[in-house]
Length: 382
Image 1 (cartoon, rainbow, N blue to C red):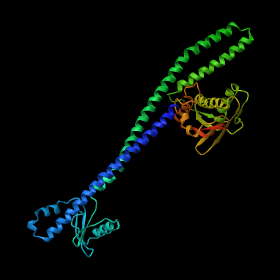
Image 2: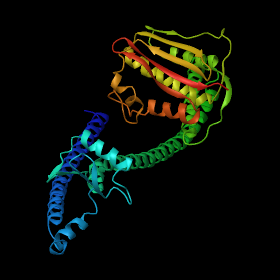
Image 3: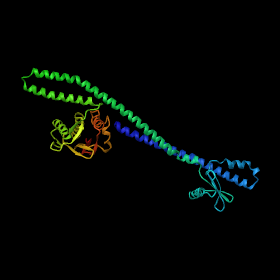
Image 4: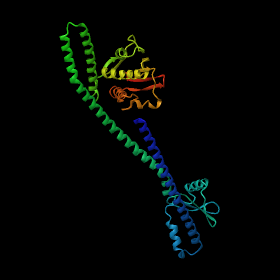
């Protein structure tokens, strides 16, 4: 199980734990609300008994009953007579007459909701849950919203900080790598020039030294690419057909003979995009190397260029092993690699180069296992 499989499992564990916490909270809140509702119903029953006894005797003898009646300041109550008319109300608002349309609507709603009235002699008492109980029933929803907001803002903050730290580490490593390569490259160039002078009369040696010179230039190009990571590279107007053809020529010379490259030629109408040639080549070469690795030394690599209103699009397709759909995004994350040897930074850096430096997009367009994969690069039209 790789790092990102474990990461995905942890997300599921946290999600399940969150659901369990919310469920426990909702059950507990519902339990408390039901307990309070039962207590309120007992209070309403006591209120009805006090009212009945107070109406049946002398008021001076029922001071306690009066206190019970006046003590209800939270439970909305409607007292309904034998004829179905409202004969009293409490806690529905100030100065509401018994025939007020608001009270009539409340009574109708309680009857439709099948709220069981409390019978007090010939009268009935209809009681609604108090504001406290209604608020308590909404508490789990408020709690879920607050927890979700806290988690979302926390995750966003930590993710931003982590990405910033990763970017600084990458930029530092890249610049240090470029710096460390600079000294031996300069020394090798000097030694090659010295050997050319020593063996001017040896044509074979001169040919070998020229190839060494080409490879050293390539190393110098790699160092230049690393030096541009972490800084804003210069973007130049370049014909994407020409740039792509240069990548094809370089990679085809270093590929097995059983691999066929099908790239668009230079006869097409130029498509000008603002890119940094060195970094763009790095992205394309990385995709081509991955394609060669996935095909096992034989197959076909195809490139297509097409446009829409906003972008110049480049499709790089191969006939290799393919990528599972669940890994379409994971392949661009640092450290992910299917190779036994490799740091898993190639596609991660490619994504950074295209999206951060060129304001474009790179993604897995489609992939079928054992049939091939298509990567798409979208570059803004200028």
